Image (cartoon, rainbow, N blue to C red; front, side, top):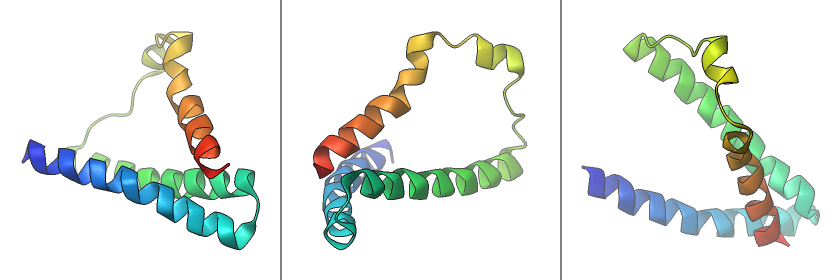
Length: 89
């Protein structure tokens, strides 16, 4: 099952570039295209959070857990945004 998820993730990453290129062809604005990409990702993740929380009854992280994250731990989303923007450009 893990291998199936690995293959699916690889396929989805390859499809992301084409999807972003299609949006950019319509909008002609790479920053807005990147915003569309991340905006739709946030919507999907909020839905996944709601489903995961309902199914597993997992508690949300406490404030102490959030504050324990080092500064560089917050860079993943920023690096992802730069990656997508560079790909669109």
